[in-house]
Length: 400
Image (cartoon, rainbow, N blue to C red; front, side, top):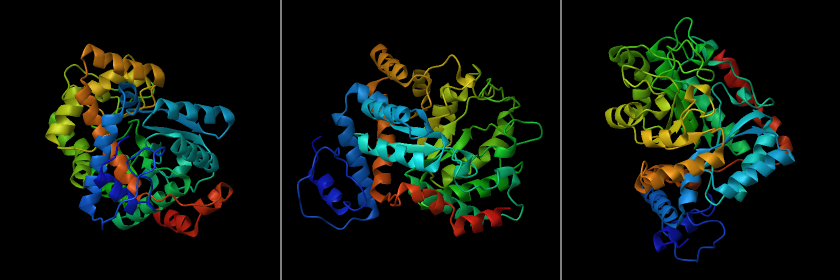
């Protein structure tokens, strides 16, 4: 990849913070450096994103839109899959159940083998123990003390960021912004029934994550709280009016967007009041392009919920990209779906310019993240001890 003088000079300054916008296989030439301020970092990230996009094949572009799911077990089979995904050029992975040491080995391997810095994501709605058996346990969201406030939730998010960095994770699929009610599926995953309290606690947690340079991804837009069905097994239908959606479900998302936080996940529920065709939200243009992008003004990353869930049955990744999503989580068959995206471009259902717009958001966030991301170093066999720190215990006790 050809790198211009600006990007090279910035990379020299950021050498201790991580690799620059040029692929790892190419050494930048030495040039005089300059003092870098925040606006320069933003320009650096956009410049490197644009340079990378110009150098990528159509196949590489399509692959960057995907984040397949892998179990956190560092056995030979799992590592061979990680190598395969890196060779495809996927945008990242989602870590499923396993142990913290294996998760760290997987994250490090993907990073070393990837041509472009990857996202390494995990569901941590109530801490890494939701997925990693030897990580610190925190109370589920519904059981957090009524006395909990913004301060402790911010500290909780900051602690989660520390734990993620120690493993090599740079994205948390959380917080949950859904407003629960009696008899609904989301239940204990929600911070409660009061939209104001849910907004306060979840956004403080997200801000804590991002203070530690971890991407937060709020979910499940435009609101899973009223669903009585599980979108892993079916497609729930949310029969709320636009007025109810606006005053209840959308309130936390609106406040999250106002804080200019990073990512939003789209669920697999249908909303007749928004989309008369009753498409799952993750493949609905009225939900993503019209409501989220245009009406609410969100310009961050839009991710689908896992596309291997039955709530999305019958719809491929191409439909989600057409609707406005940037990244596809957990496709049933990553290689096949990459081919489907390419076929959609060839049919002109999706333009290459559309793909480049999605990639610019993805790569901008990656290069900005890389510039300030410092994973904790240390031996992998010490990870469980490092995670289960006195600070983690203090925060857990305050949340109860």
